[in-house]
Length: 100
Length: 131
Image 1 (cartoon, rainbow over the protein chains, first blue to last red):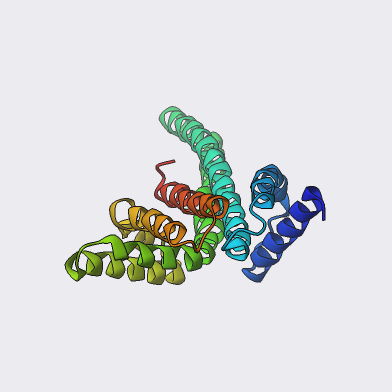
Image 2 (cartoon, rainbow over the protein chains, first blue to last red; image 1 turned 30 degrees about the vertical axis):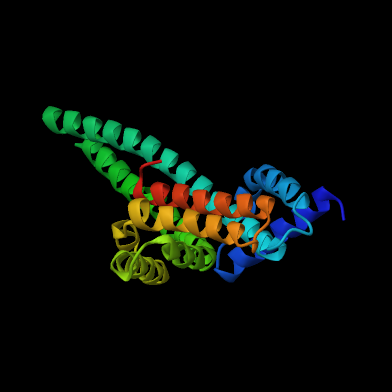
């Protein structure tokens, strides 16, 4: 099995796990693809090492965590932008109030 | 007065859609941490074997259990209240080292376990709002 197809299999496993938790990670999946490819390339060198099967699960869990971290950081960026808009709206409101 | 109403409505709309970060923490990051912790917890327990006595081990094991319960409950405040930085994180890394030393993990496999622990650390810091 080639590395790209293993990556896709791994991502499908991550997707299934997320789905089992009631989450849709489709939008976030592209960002994880590159990260997964790096991890899987590393894992490919570990075939035959003790604990290999546990490492496959560790990689899957690491990808899940990375997805969560990316999603949170993206959402925080949105919050920061909204806070700016909110501040503008409040300034506009207070000006309107003073002018009323 | 009309402009004031517009501004107030805009503010309410923004409030309604804000806090995306908080939702991402609860709905995406926390479940991922809960799943990953199933693999991190045994490493923490293993790592305590390096501590000289039960007086040192017990607080780490208690904190590890507190983290398990906090993640299971989905309570962000309870998770960030756990001492991951000084008790659990070093113990998890020590657990990987001990397992590698015992021949249970190969060097590349051990590196993947270390990577998992470090990703969990980044997740914890992200949950706390540090990173």
